[in-house]
Length: 306
Image (tube, rainbow, N blue to C red; front, side, top):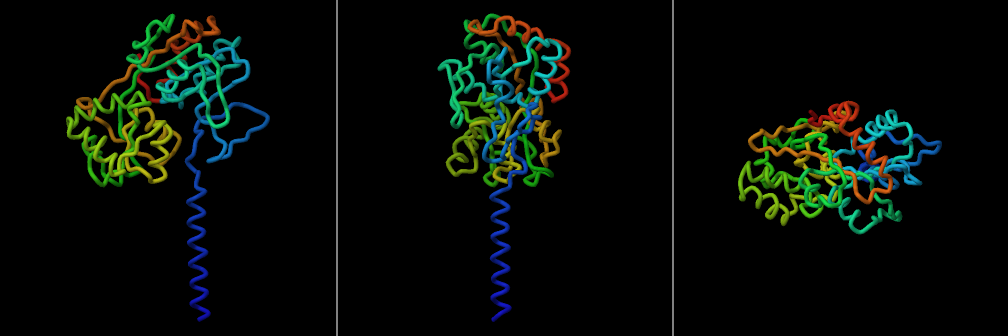
C-alpha cells in the first residue's frame, strides 16, 4: 500500500511539473531584436512584452511605420541611420501589420493594452500595391527592397512538407495570415492559386478553417513562428526573410522553398507623408533608405536588394 501511495504521489508530482513547465514555457517569446539601451530593463516574457514598438515614444524627431515583416532589420537599420544622420537620436518606429498601420493613420491613434499612441508618422513603408492605393497621401516614394514567399516548418520538417499543396492535407495544421488585416494574405492566395487552383484555396481557407486545422493570425510575423515553435501549428506560408531570421537567431525552424513558378514577389516602397510632422527628417530618412548602408542591412537579413 505504501509503495502504491508513493508511486501515485510521484506520478502526480511529475504531472504537475510537466504542466507547470509547459504553462510557463516562454523560451521562444519575442522580442527577438536587441532592446534599446536603458538604465532599467523590464521585459517579462508572456506578461509585459511589446516587441513591435521601438525606440523613443517621448518627443521623437522621426516617426516610422514599417511593414511588420521587416521587424528583424529595424534596430540595425535605425542604428545605421543615426550614425549617418547624428542630428536624429530620438526615433520611434512601429512594425505592426501594414493594414493595421494604414488604419492607425486613418483614425489617428492605436491602443495596445493600456497604452494609446497618437503619434503621426513621417514615413510609412508597405508593399507597392498598398502605397499605390492612396497616392495623394504621400509627397515622395522610394522602392528599396523585395521579398518572396517560403514555408516555415519545425526543425527537420516532421510533416515532410514539400510545397504549398501539402498545406491542404487534413493532418497538416496551418498558420495562415488573415486576409482582412495582413497584406501578405493576398500574395499567399495568389501562390495557392498557382500551386493548386481554387481547390487548394478552398481546402486551406474554407474547409480547414472550419475544422480548426487552419489558424488565421492577427500578426503573422510573430504568431506563425511562435505557433510552430510551441507545436500549435505544423507549417505557415510567410515571407522568406521571416524563416531566414528564425534560423539566424538559432530557433529550431526549417525553410521549405517555394518554386518560382508558384511564388510571388513583393516590392517594398517607403513613402513620406504630406502630413509628416518632421518634414526634413522624413526627407533624410528616404535618402537613407536607398543608400548603400540601408541596402547592406536589408541584404544581411535575406531581403532582395539591387
